[in-house]
Length: 113
Image 1: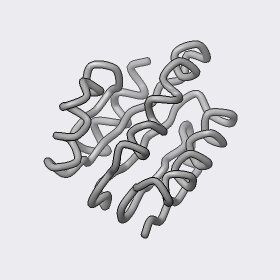
Image 2: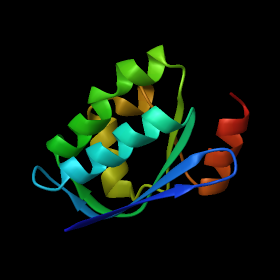
Image 3: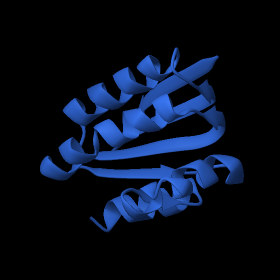
Image 4: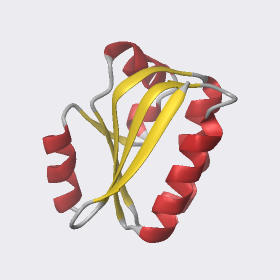
């Protein structure tokens, strides 16, 4: 079960992900990311309530890396639980994506762009 909320902030879009992202639920994350990339140059993905992410969920993020770079979009992931971060780290995604600890750090990172 997954819950994805997309919130419009003053200068960025925030995506909040709650629950588990697996093959069947990754489409919701994909839809939220795609629409955010079309609407905003600054995006925070808050993963504080993400309990689990499968390879399909990671694939969603990976599939947008090129678009994020080519459109010069600032995407920052924050608030990952250690076990979720470990999955990103195993695949080397912490070198390809900006990952910070808190939402405050994410907002700061957006403004450094």
